Image: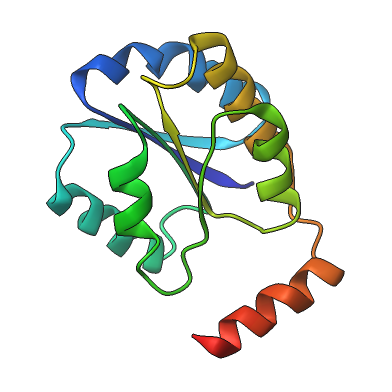
Length: 141
């Protein structure tokens, strides 16, 4: 069973816990939920968890999404997407195999956040021709 971590950064975002937990559990995924204050140190700690494969995919809800995106995208093997719509959520999961999705709650409405998380978690990586492109990018790094 795929393990999804839901990370809610900043007190304003703790309100998403119940709704998004239900969305992820309804999709038959194992869920880890964490609430924390936004900090650079927290993002480094989360990256360590990613590198040791404590979970398969990470969904981060923070105020704007930029800090998490910029920090986590710097590390090898992280495929990070900063998303604000359902279509991009589906495509980043299916075509890019993103293992981290970041949503800015101040930029995206509550219903849209619900749908974006649902699309991301419900969509699997298609591999095939997309994997060829990812392999080429990995060779460059």
